[in-house]
Image (cartoon, rainbow over all chains, first blue to last red; front, side, top):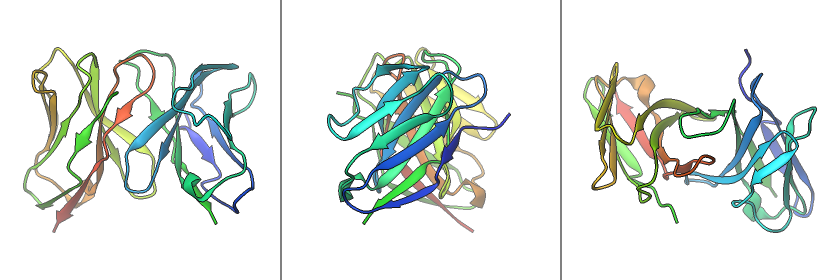
Length: 115
Length: 110
């Protein structure tokens, strides 16, 4: 059973371009979480999705950021018109259900660099 | 809001015990977690503790929870060079997301 997969692993964009980050959850997992890790900081929650639904987006910046988890295919985190402050590692996690005892399995992350 | 604090760095000699400390703010957290992050990798769940427990032991790992002081610690016995990594504590006050500390970078000196 493959783990959580994220691609690309590294992404370089110029200011003003768009970044699309993909996350394929573990097989059988229908819950996906996105976190952002700024340099020398811990992970900060961004958004929690189930298939086709955004459940909690309280950590998402109000502008330029969006996320989706379609019925088929990976979850996508999209950042429009990137700025230097968006440079970070973006981690996706998946779980088979919700609740405190349910483990979240993390992917290897996508490291975004904005030039 | 939730706030999870950790010291940033810890160095120990190989074979010694490591103790990584964490304080959290949300007393409603039912579970508290310790994750390990190796360079360039994602987070790996090491262990977790239910909030009604004081201690949990799992091989070389011992987790202590002082709920009154909102203090969590992770002890690694017989620390090895392969234990060098960043260790994050996290709380989960609701059903959804985790709140992470800033991480403690553990360096094991041979």
